[in-house]
Structures are given as C-alpha cells and as structure tokens.
Length: 250
Image 1 (cartoon, one colour):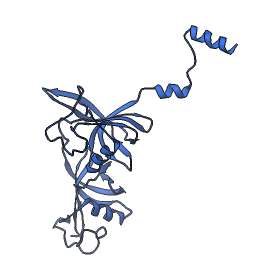
Image 2 (cartoon, rainbow, N blue to C red; image 1 turned 90 degrees about the vertical axis):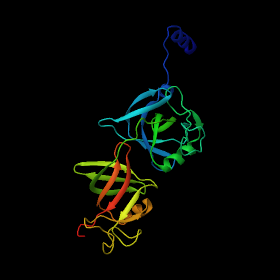
Image 3 (cartoon, rainbow, N blue to C red; image 1 turned 180 degrees about the vertical axis):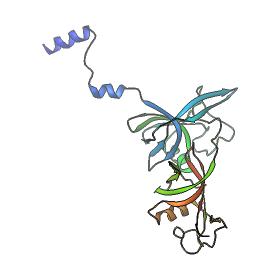
Image 4 (cartoon, rainbow, N blue to C red; image 1 turned 30 degrees about the vertical axis):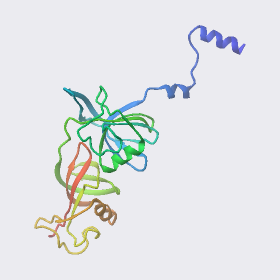
C-alpha cells in the first residue's frame, strides 16, 4: 500500500520534500560590502547597495550605504574565494587583474588567502551565504574608495581590532589595521590611557607622539569606560585611520 501511495503521488506530480532537503536547496543570500576580520575564520560585513560599472575594459562596483542595514557575521572557512589579483599571494593587483564578465575576482584561492587580506584591512567582497556560513566569496574593485572625515567623540574597545565610536547621538563600529596611527599625550606609547602628565599634548590637548594600532589596543584595555578622542575615519568602509588621545586640561 505504501509503494502504491508513493507511485500515485509521483504520477499526480506532488510528493512531500523533507524540510531539511528543501532548506538545503534554497538559494543562498547575497551581500556586497567592505568585509572585516572578526575572529579566526570569521568576517563581518555591512550590506551595501552595489551598482556594476563598466567603462571600457575597467569593471568595478559603486557601493552606497543602505539605510538600516544590519551587520552580518559569517564563517568563511568552507567558502570558495575568488581574488581580483592574478595570483593568490599578491597584496596588490600590480597592474593586472583577473575579473569575470560581472567584475568579480576569478583567481581561485583558499580561505587562508582571504584571512591574509583581511589582516591588512577591509576587503570589498560579494558573499553568498546560507545561515551563518559563507559558501562563495569574490573580491571586486570599487569605482572610488570612500573618503575619510574627522570628528571628536568617545571610543570604546570591542576587541583588539574593533572599536565603537560615538559622536553626538550616532555610534558606529570601526576596525583598525596595522596602518592605524595612534597619537599619544603620554610619555610612552605603551602607557595606560592618559597616564602621567600630558608631556606630548599640543595646546588643544591632542596627542603628538605617534604610536601604533597595537599601542591603541593596549591603552584601551586599561579603561572600561568610553574615552574622549579625535579620529580620522572612513565611515563607509568602517575603518579608523588615526586616533588622537585627548587630554582635557592641557
């Protein structure tokens, strides 16, 4: 009877598909944006509106913010990865690119190559994902890298490479890189936040001693509350370029 029922269902064109099989066959979601490292084998990316631009042989994407877009965190250890460079270990394109007709990187690389890129800073990516897992990732070129701006506000540590910056009523998550410069008011780069006299503060209370992003991470670890800063940052890409420690009574 069971075989007869299945045969009848097939003949009539309907038979139940297990929920697990149906979900596995579901089309992946797609997100474009600037990706940042977020722990081993993970990235975070804020969805952007992407427009494909082709001028002659140059193929790129124009990214614009999406109102209310929420950050996506994904595991990329099992994803395929296509780079825009002609070799996986190159830091820059060096004048040669490997792009498909849609302007997406087509050099087949490994997740470890993406880890190396993310360690240097934000990477423009198109990511196909299911749930919390990325399944296919491609680099692309941006038509124009977003501009930076400066502002005063408060900074709060999330982890060694991520901070929350609040100015006015707005708070944004920003990533730091090895290229981030930290200007200190203190005598030494590795001092705690505002430790000692402001021997390296200018007349506006801004730090003058150039230090590293590692020094910034260490200094922020020494405080639990948000601290007053001036920063130069790239809001659309989510990166912090320079941070000035501020001593209010200098």
